[in-house]
Length: 139
Length: 80
Image (cartoon, rainbow over all chains, first blue to last red; front, side, top):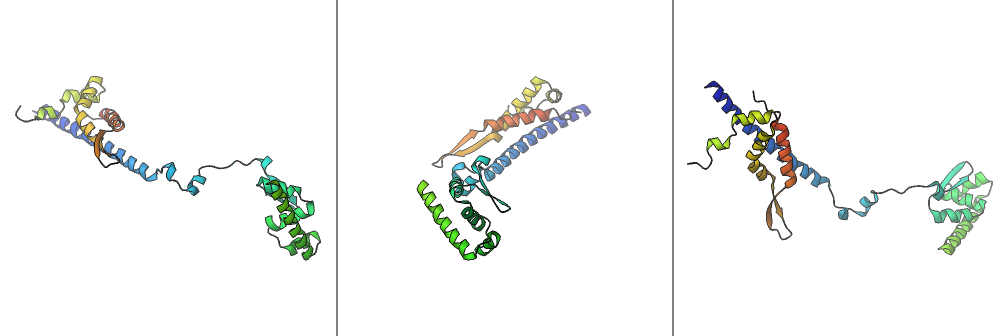
């Protein structure tokens, strides 16, 4: 009777073993699906901001306009502004760069370039006009 | 047969279990056949269309996955 009951026991054990495996695997599958559903977003439902995070623009040295003023290197990424700045005379360009890209005041620029504050301001205003003309002429 | 399912038909015979656990292909197929109904029941999903009508549909991916899992696990069953 002993071997018989052992076999019987194994038959039941195998049956429950198989059913447990199948049931657990099915549960794994559905929790994986749920996980995926939580994290997955349709491309068409992305906000514009999220869409912007999906790509990056390459930077090429040829597209960057680089100017050096005093001891600073200033890089300008925008092609139109870069070209317009390159077209300015050097002194005016320096003033624009120092003021708008490095955030210096007219007084500070005057000290660096040995100019009066008021003449820096005047040159800066004229340089802006010139830039405006140049860019409008191009556009 | 008095009952729809006798005890004999619900359990696999011991020799088949022993053979399947040791890797016998025919025995493994017999085990898969035995649990086919349960596997299909587990892989059946209820799907809804845009009008809210529901359909029952067997997820073939899940069915295959359950079969594969069962096969790999049968081989680890301790018969002794």
